[in-house]
Image (cartoon, rainbow, N blue to C red; front, side, top):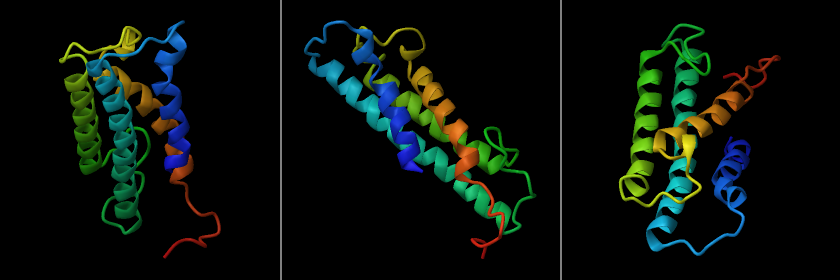
Length: 144
């Protein structure tokens, strides 16, 4: 799962490189912001995947009704809470390192000026890949 999302994170994280014509040496605070953004988004991808993995497992084991884990908006309350927690935590971590510290690079504009903007962008990539990641086995070969 991480290989699929790795390309999306690299593409999103490389936004600043494409948005600026001449890369300048970032200040220590800006470099920390950029580093924190990349590592937080990587962790977010894994955490959101784990939320769905647990949901799918519970669905398969009959602990929750079939169809409770439909991506990107599951009806299972525990999964929704898990996703909400990881989304909020990731956005707050990015904001703490960047916006709150006054360390946003010049290219972090528009939707990229806040942690929630970054998380929403990466979340779109995650959501589009989830159906293929957690698809059923047509032959039931991989079922317990």
